[in-house]
Length: 378
Image 1 (cartoon, rainbow, N blue to C red):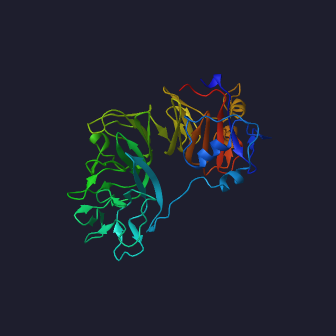
Image 2: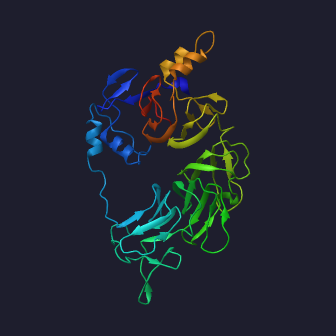
Image 3: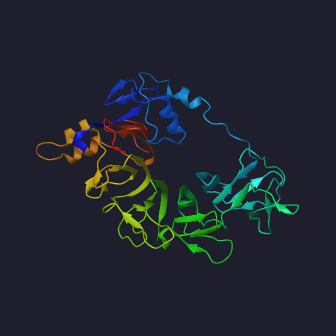
């Protein structure tokens, strides 16, 4: 319950310390490990922070090499926005349509999504394990009487719009984005409405719950504890009415149904991102209400109902004896005063980044940390 914990926002001040309720303090519960996890997009509740009394400046952490990358001689004609793996295979999605590479006279048409294997084990040069058919679509290449392992292979004929997010779910790759259809290699396009799944074993597209979304943009998809969660701009999903921008699917993804929402969802805007701490889900975006709870661009689902994520001291000032002072609360903004575009979680903390200037009524400049003194049960 909110009365059992001390919740507050803190923000980075650029020196490696945090501003907590206006005071400069050492990050006693933030470590190099958790910051590296954050900037690697791999922070999770499974890796709680180790308590220390000091931490190096943020710029020193960011400037250190974190991963080793392999040289791959290809170029995309648009941005990469999503990566995921399933069964040891790497999948890439984004706003690109073609893959360009040295030695290619015909670009490979992949339409926003493709499979990328053997990164680092084989360099791409000349034909490099990729062949082109008449329309330039990537496919398996022949070498003598057998097949060479492909480095790039399209997922069917891709999608008709950008892919924003990917996750593995039931040994499939689920993609979310601002597309309306997915294309099999043969046959008619499949109306999907911003959400679809690729079966890498059968090499085919399918719909989660066997029902397309209508007029939907899916900003993020995430599989957590064998449940699929999606957020974005949509009203209904898979027969569940008025889920309003956030929904989950559980059970057999190839059979009808399985979708449900979280009370009446979000109102006054839409969702952009989500993260998890134990059994709780955090949703960010640009919205004013979660269920019947007044919020500001971020909210917490505790398993039964929506909760605010407000700075505790700021919230106290708003809860006046004669009722909340709505003007003061809006002016101070006890949560986040602008859109949240990404979230990450580590231990008992949530990191938010986006287009906000205030976090818990204190300057934040686009990035903030939300503390919970007692982490939720896992």
